[in-house]
Length: 129
Image 1 (cartoon, rainbow, N blue to C red):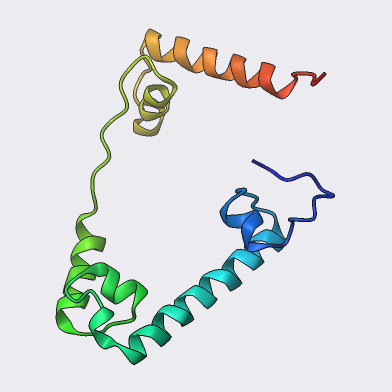
Image 2: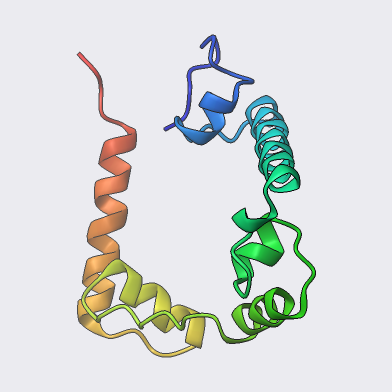
């Protein structure tokens, strides 16, 4: 959802996080909010270090823990990742998968992509009453 240009919620963390606005002011407000949340999290951990989820990528990333179990979990998470399943043929995602792999697209995927683009075209030009 993009906010209207005159919306008062521009430049707020709410605009970025909840309303999915990605304009410059909303991005900046979202970044400031993320930093403040992390600072509060780290302040809580300074008082009670048992809050750190040791041995997890979360401990290394969000709690700045540098113990070997946390760093090893972070490295493993970055290295492995969860492979995404290939989208099925006959969908717009299937069409994109063919294109990314440099494959010839099948007819069901071409039809699905054309239908998706056609619907997007009509949605963009829909007149609100």
